[in-house]
Length: 338
Ligand code: AHG
Ligand code: MN
Ligand code: MN
Ligand code: MN
Image (cartoon, rainbow, N blue to C red; front, top):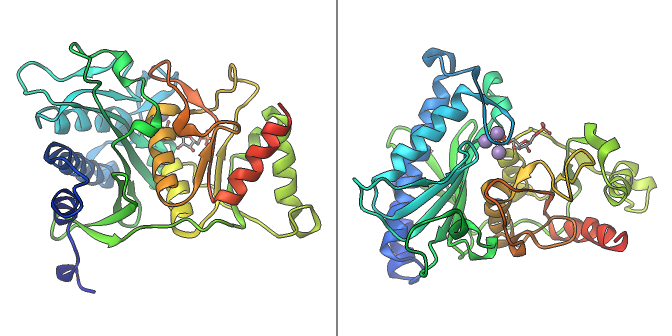
């Protein structure tokens, strides 16, 4: 099919509003603006050394990570692109310690935007895939002055979630609660064009993604599952698995959406409680909504991620997501060991 016969993101959103009654007009406009911000980020990351945007910024973020110049730049870009639209009350980002209230010079709206402006930022200096992850929440009706508390909503309350992946092509993968749809950026038209409809993750898989250099820090059930995966057909799982690792959650989950698999970032004896590396609000929740909407599953080893009650902005969580059967297996190992 040629591009002209395909549906644009704008048309998809308008049909969601008009035909399927699944989208208030202000949410549609918000998603259009987010998509425009992702387009901007896509052009910015593609410049690389030409624009001197690679390397470290020389600062640390609240997560204790050394910020890349592009972590800072994309965060600002996302703020500037989204603050004037009139549909948001506030934003929260992996790269900002505090929430960002929409300044009084702009009209305010009913939504909260939560985002990881650049996921997989260690890949940026080597020209390998990175992404942007976002989650949209409705501001609680009882809230007048927006505060952190308004953001502490379970993932199942997200009204939309998505990511942009900056790979060989730039793609936007979106859910508003009626399946997962993907749009490719046509750089000549400057528009997002729908290229996949209702993406589905196969229930079974023979592919996994994990940073196994952390093996010695994992809990016993995780070590058990990993041992079984690499034992292949001679082990209890009786099949050979393949391992893939891009070091960017967006890329990992995108591959899984397209061909099945399980992505894991388990808890680690170096982190307090059962926390993992990934952030609940900026990474785990939006990706879990997408994975579930595509027929997959997502847990922290015990609990469905979308049922976790956040208690702080930057809290971390262990993540197991992807093909249902494998997520259920590794989750059952954790539950047995409780
Ligand atoms: P971010 O770049 O937003 O900080 O996130 C990076 C995350 C995630 O994308 C990826 O799965 C993980 O960090 C990889 O980390 P390690 O290579 O340190 O395991
Ligand atoms: Mn980071
Ligand atoms: Mn990230
Ligand atoms: Mn990031």
